[in-house]
Length: 76
Image 1 (cartoon, rainbow, N blue to C red):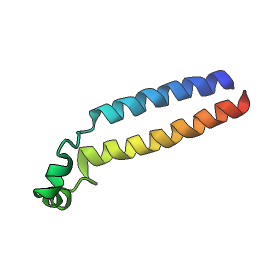
Image 2: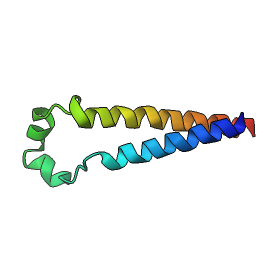
Image 3: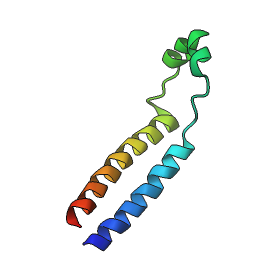
Image 4: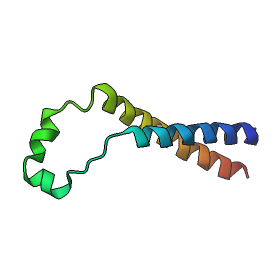
């Protein structure tokens, strides 16, 4: 059982890494928020499309990663 959980943890960690690396960066920083960053924040629909899907995948895999890690520590 421990081996199966370790394999699932490895797969989840690879998916988490890939989904985070595929997301676009927020390089605007503080200057972007002062000079019209609110327009970009409310103008784009980030909850839909490619970025929204990657965000949901990242959230789910991060939760799975934490839960699987805690289960593996509890078993050992």
